[in-house]
Length: 188
Image 1: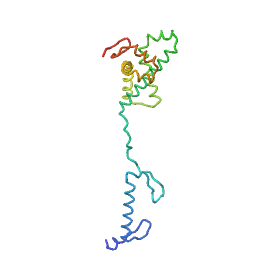
Image 2 (image 1 turned 90 degrees about the horizontal axis):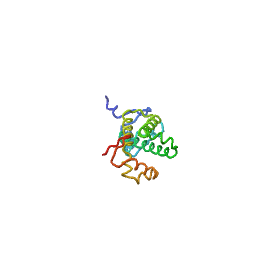
Image 3 (image 1 turned 90 degrees about the vertical axis):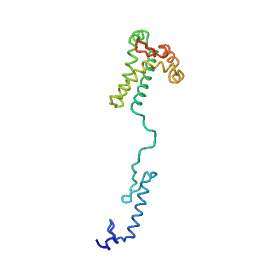
């Protein structure tokens, strides 16, 4: 390698550059790269194409999503509350004959209707995970057995969501500190 070669460089467009212009361009390039890599810069302009390019951003600094089992429990509780409210509304508008017939099957309906709503919601949302379905179904069954305890603990919260008749009906259906599974009642 000759000494002259180290002093002269050929640019990409065919111009001949001396080592001083080459060093200057390296400094400009390093400065541009530093600006591109800075955390504040989200976009930069490509000097060759002239297009504004979005830099790959790192993860957002927002609150992370809760674990899947927490989301499953929240969905199960929400489905249970919707189902309980729908059953309460159905009891208001149903005839006495329908209520007398349904009273025999009400423990099954209280669990089966939320599970049906849960399956329908999962189908509409395209969810396929078996583990999350198990968590949601378990939450629905446990919630169906123990929702009255939450109503006894915080009736004012449920009064904001539901009517006073619903809250009084749930409180009248079971004593606090129990699990109600159909005709069976277990004291905690």
